[in-house]
Length: 532
Image (cartoon, rainbow, N blue to C red; front, side, top):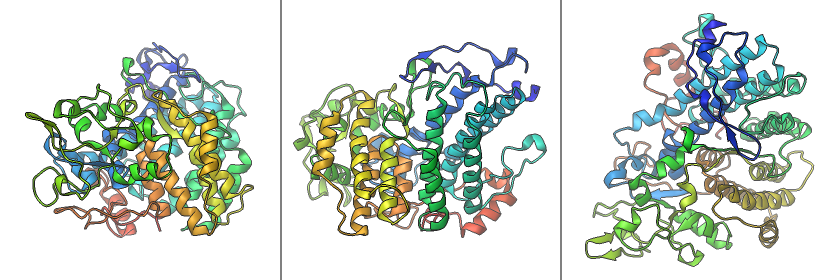
């Protein structure tokens, strides 16, 4: 028992929220408690934040996937040259560090979940252990979707003497994770222990069940091309168990900057160079403008003229939909052939004299994305409904129609954008928009294009860029034109995975070698198992 209690859980002072996001302090020092008095529920806020931190900010989402899937764009020069990783697939000085963040954070967080589960089972906390298993599957499936093959069956067993675990193929890992998730959900609710210190659902076990089955649905839909039979099996199980029924069920993690738990994407986008050089892409702005999407005026603004205003995230820009212009991916500010001034629709520099912004009047994210108390959208009702629309369009056995699921997903997406707190779309307006923009059901291909373009837009606007990328890999939508910038590391292709951390070659060389051989290489463009 002491081996668990001796580990410093530095995040245990994370404040705790009820369902509406209000926090109260936790002031229990695990290093002064023994196994008889320590409550493993104290670990739950930490692992919740760990996952949110892994899927946001400079751990990868902003620096890689946001621009790989062309939701955002950057001129990637000056102080913000680190965005060359994303917008142009060109390595910056810290690329090797960025590569390993999801891996290190994911396994560290999962190890902490393991500690929580072990302590929970020692105390007979069946429900908490089941919640831990849901969270561990969520975390390690995220890691696997980014890299491919990972240690799973032998992972997190250093206390059993396994310090160099084998890498499971992603197909093996996925089957095990789905089975483990199903087992956890069958157990959840059978115990008498309450879920305490729960920053996500305030201890509501019914909502945890809906989250678990919604995770199952998303994982099952990853498999529609590579293993359609298993996909159907787990889609059916997820629906029988009960997925999100409304936006009130979705997993939205509150942030708390005053206590050191700020939104990591907001931390990144508050950097002065990011304020200046990160813009919404032409693809995104054009998509939103094509249907007069009411989210456009909430998420995008054109900064006031001049360099000073463009570098100041506190000034409010022009949010009128007609003013918005997306920055095409792949341009720079170096004065050569790829200079943004050569872009065919370049709007020209803004400002005058010594206060000129050569980047031009392109749309940047509004202040909601720079709010360090902004929520982290883990999985939403809109995404669940759109995945069900995808399933229906493919002919999977689901109870509703693609058109009805799509309409519900679009409505949910418009309503959920209001959870950022910087503007909202009313339920009536969301319903009217969905009715005015119904799903094209003339063919399966036409339906899948609309559905998955909406998943791309929705997950991106909710700053879940890794999920946008994963769904693009799965579906092929939106259809993107890669950037082929000089010196890129992917042969002019959009990256489909991240490289394994260099440290694995020394800490687990045999396991790494097996994974690389099984996957056909360790490159930016060889696909993970389900990416067909």
